[in-house]
Length: 559
Ligand code: B12
Ligand code: SF4
Image 1 (spheres, protein in one colour):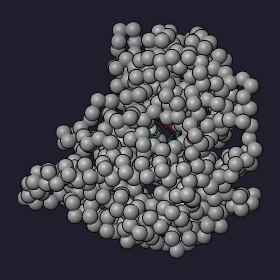
Image 2 (cartoon, protein in one colour; image 1 turned 135 degrees about the horizontal axis):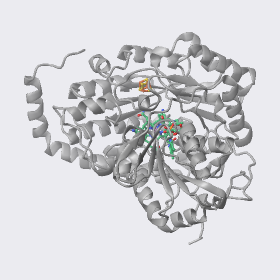
Image 3 (tube, rainbow, N blue to C red; image 1 turned 90 degrees about the vertical axis):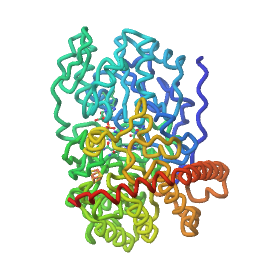
Image 4 (cartoon, rainbow, N blue to C red; image 1 turned 30 degrees about the vertical axis):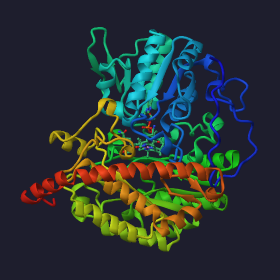
């Protein structure tokens, strides 16, 4: 039982140099006193935070290998806040890296001092595993409190409580809410009045306490605790070298979940704080490339200018490159020049669709042409540009999809990902398709993930005029076609990180043991594609009839 879990083989550390670090701990579950990372053993921690794995039905394990993986940011912030406030020590386990079987869970919980609190971070794609862990914790120790937080339970707090998977749900940003909760729990006080909590009373009634406001000054939160995750730095591939420099996004895209947590606010860390985190990653962990995981790092140009100036003044632009997501309409020549000077190399823009009509409908707030211009301008400044397209918006036609494919294939992009719309709860799009009675929710939301098409078929939403196989066929074709064109193959073989913001295929992978894994993945993808192509052909008559009906209906207003 106490046998350490095998540590996964290090995945490539693309663009990062290996610095002399203390030896890695052999396993997540053995980290504790005596490790060089200053982490506390579980026997000193009243809080166990778990990042549940994404549902296996949602994510194809074989694809997981090449998809960017990253430490659970939200849990890191919560743990370091409890530490800073000297409330208690926290132990973090990431199920994305290590399976948590019953014996392991029992060992962890039984090692904790009382009172014991187990916190789980939940996104829609991890509902099944999260609820399962919650129930298992309750069985192992009926006195332990199970708390859930994260975007999914913030939007739908009653679900976990009704399904007896959690005792308490923290709605919204968790640092301050959970700290107040833990203070009360440890003092033996009544925690039930805390703002931002939903809980279930002795009569089984759910109580939603009032909301708590967002953290006002982000810099009052402690710097991100990279040391909590450093023993697993090889297993998070390039995702270990990530910084969250701002929170939120003021735009109103109807498919995006961001506003469920941060409304339309945009808050950012001071440049001093961001520099401090960059220096930690560069000096302590040898980062050569850092990913800004902000929703949109370029909302405030003055701030971005100051940040770039600070990076340059410290000479960090000579040591490390940067990448991040922004909008094309936030870009202009002056900001591009400054970003290049600060050594930003990869930019991601969401193009979403090739149709101006759909762009208006999803309230993107920018036009297709603006994004196209932004991509071309960024490329002319030497940036590598990545984009994402969403197929399956309401009223979208098959012509819209093929137009988007043609458009994207002609753009000077470094990587692109075509996804099928996942109408996440909390978004206006979810409300719209649900109200129309067209949203299919599998048990535990297992069909809610952008990668679902590679694994399953019961998509959450299919627009009129197509069927699931036709939609999946087009999306898979678009993805495979992009990378299997001569230009795509060349890019995969020569780029520093092929796939840009999506997958991790470091330079030189073809001549390494990694090539075999890639071949297996390619075979899997092609076989799944053939399966879907056959189904699409068999169901073609249904699609054609659907289109006929669509043609007869009056066209949807262009808003
Ligand atoms: C960076 C990022 C990633 C990274 C790393 C994710 C990670 N584990 O940190 C990668 C690329 C790996 C990734 C993967 C995926 N992502 Co992502 N990702 C983001 C992004 C842009 C930032 C995440 C972040 O750092 N947020 C900042 C932190 C501070 O916020 P937070 O995580 O919500 O945590 C706070 C609260 O939620 C709460 N909280 C969270 N957990 C807990 C636990 C407890 C006990 C408590 C009390 C509180 C609490 O307190 C935290 C601190 O304030 C968000 C968008 C966003 N703005 O959040 C999308 C986002 C979270 N991702 C999303 C999705 C869909 C995915 C995937 C499912 C994609 C896929 N495979 O299909 C996977 C799921 C992986 C996973 N297990 O999380 C959606 C989730 C929508 C939804 N309803 O579920 C988002 C919201 C994007 C969007 N706009 O739609 N993602
Ligand atoms: S611009 Fe991006 S992050 Fe902002 S609301 Fe739209 S999709 Fe979400």
